[in-house]
Length: 284
Image (tube, rainbow, N blue to C red; front, top):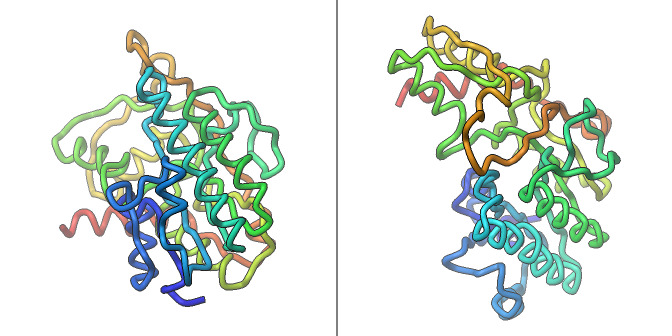
């Protein structure tokens, strides 16, 4: 497989940017080049010579999806657009790589396996689950189910680091448990599955290591940055008390990584990738 046979959809997002670095010769499109929510636009695009669609496009504003306008956009991007792209992939015998989320589950089980039944709590989770169902109809698909993604752009690590450097002692949710997933690890896994090549299907992929809370991650960020700020644990209910339009969150987001490990992929520990990420941020 050569870069020129790959198209990256959602190329300007966190994952899309990381994929673009890995596959510099790939075609790269975002909403301003291709409106994937339009069936006509997708069908009229020149797909010749392409063998793999990497779909990094998604509407990820979890709370925004609970609004009337956000609900429509979430469904258009996370379900309708996925169907449009998947139809092209099936008709042209292309491999379709799609990114899923722990939000397709209700967070009452841990860790989540690839075969767990969907039970989304939010509009965002429901729209992503719909996209997963669509992609599963393609005989040549990889769905990577992930959680707590960190890459370029605004993200939790950068926000906490900025607060810490300003001397803030934050209150952070302590009852949501999971692992970070760095875009570098997602890209490594995608490249591994495509080039092995591994059996088609759904694979859980987060960084490895001990599942922890957002509060624990904040403490690790401060430790790696040499900051002595204090972090106070609060419950999800306490954190969002009095705020309107908040989507319900799964409390257990840990993913069972057994399947992708069994394929031969060595998953990096989130703690090591976090140290490297914080060091990189501090050097800017």
